[in-house]
Length: 85
Image (cartoon, rainbow, N blue to C red):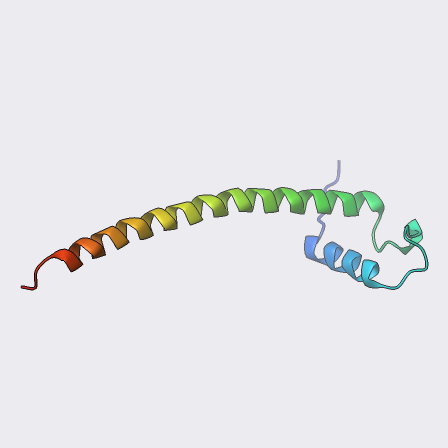
């Protein structure tokens, strides 16, 4: 089976541009889509998975930063309590 490379940004950009165009109907004709419907669905699903994974990783990073900040803030508070040398 042949592999086809798809430029995610290009598909999303073209799809977004299509949706921004004025339309007389709520549901557009499939002929207006810049790529086949299945390609657009696949790209959207892939991007959602990337976003969800990024959110999970981002959450871990943010938590680690908050924990480090708390440790450093506590150390600073202890230093401020110490008498001047």
